[in-house]
Each structure stands twice: as structure tokens, then as C-alpha cells.
Image (cartoon, rainbow, N blue to C red):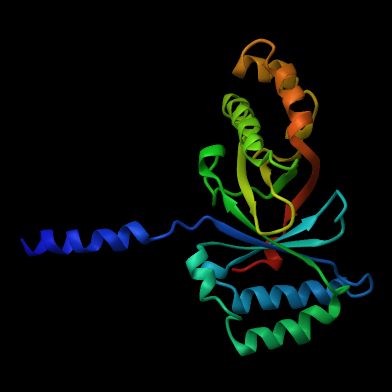
Length: 239
């Protein structure tokens, strides 16, 4: 009876527990003549201060408008945990301000992203060393419709065995989603002959003529779309 009462009383606590789905991203740009020093300072900072819920993964941005920069991702964590994160410690903040930031070009870019398991084909922490991030910004009033577009794409990814993680953009600029294609087999997955053409694959997964319909909807729903290639840098990341 006591065991039953304990379980009963625990239910509200279990129900309130948040799943770790939140990832933050910080984009940094090293001064051209300080790249070696910057990477050393960044690695020291990550490996000394960032473990557990504040673990860092550092990426080199290879293409797109931020090429040459670095993306630092923290998490996954929960919004409740972020409430109590603060600055980790005074020593942590001092190290960042004195040893890392002076080696950068100044202001970077920061954002928050919430993992969408129901739209993804891979677990949040099933990582790959090379990724392609596709950024999609919704036209006004069309954010829900972008989700419907991604649901169609998900069928294609699943049929092809592609590892794609989907995140909603949270309080970080214009509303939208990012899809992170995890290149488990490396850059060869980008070759035009690695898979069948998209129209053929899309129609096979969603029905004949589905791709043409999807493109028409896409042009009405999506305001902006751009992609970038990133490579994981384990020596700069948390241990």
C-alpha cells in the first residue's frame, strides 16, 4: 500500500518533468590573424567549463554566408534547466570574456532550437561528423504550413534511410524550422548519383504528382531557404 501511495504521489512530478529537447547555438568568427589562438582558447574553455547539460559541440562552418566561422551548440537540455543555468560561474564568465572573446571579430549570433521528434528520422543525440543545415523561414501566417511540408519530406527521408533531425526556431529571429541532414556516410551522400532524383523519390513516397503540388505549396509558404555544410571539430569540443 505504501509503495502504491508513493507511486501515486510521484505522478505529478513525473508528468511535469521536461524532456531534453532544447539546443542553443552560438556562432563565432575568429580574427584572421588569431585563428590558432582562438581555437586553443575555445577548446580550453569548452573542456574546462562545459559538461553535462551545458556540453559543447563545436563545428567549422564550411559553406554559406557564415563560412569560415564556428558554430558552438550547447545541450540538449530543458527550458527549466536553462532557467537555472545563469553564467555557470564567475570563473567561467571571466575566462570567456578575457581569453576567448578578444580573439573574435566581436558580436556573434545566438539562437535556440527545439528538437521535433515527430518530424525527424533520427534521435536527437545520434550525431554525425558532417552535417547539412537547411534553414527555412515562413511567410507571415504560414508557420504551421511549413510543418506540413516537412511531414511530406519526412516520408522521403524514411524511405531513403536518411538521418535528418528537425528543430523549430524558438525566440530567435523570424519563425521557421531548420533541418539537419546528418551525413552518416560522409560527403559522398551529396553526389548527384548517390540517390535517385528528388522528384522521383518524392512521388514514390507521397504519390504520383505529389512533388509538383509540394513545390507549388512551397513557393507560397516559404519566404527564405538556405543551406550550409558544417564539420564537427572534436578537439575543440567538450570531452
